[in-house]
Image (cartoon, rainbow, N blue to C red; front, top):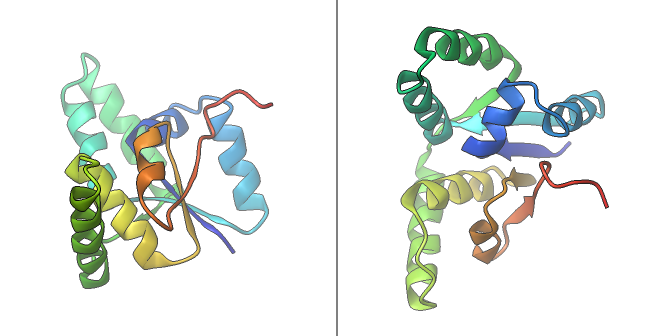
Length: 138
């Protein structure tokens, strides 16, 4: 079983049922894999919904989609990974947003987890598997 942690942009496409993201997620679930987000992404999704010009509709859509997504917490193990990743990125001169480091840390702490993102910066995190489901098929 593989876990797929969707970042905020990809999660938004999933919630809106936009392909190819939504179809790929359904296919992965059928294969026995787990699709989810982390609490940091959930917070960003709620922030986006609260600031939407269609606030109520956005909140309804987010709440309706939540049961289909595992929500992974920010654990002590993830905090330890965060410290390691942030220090490594600083040493190598690769600044990254804190939210992206949190996403990477949670994914690495889970083990057997791939981050699904359109953000190529995450590929700079050593040991992190990254895929882009929004990219056109080759």
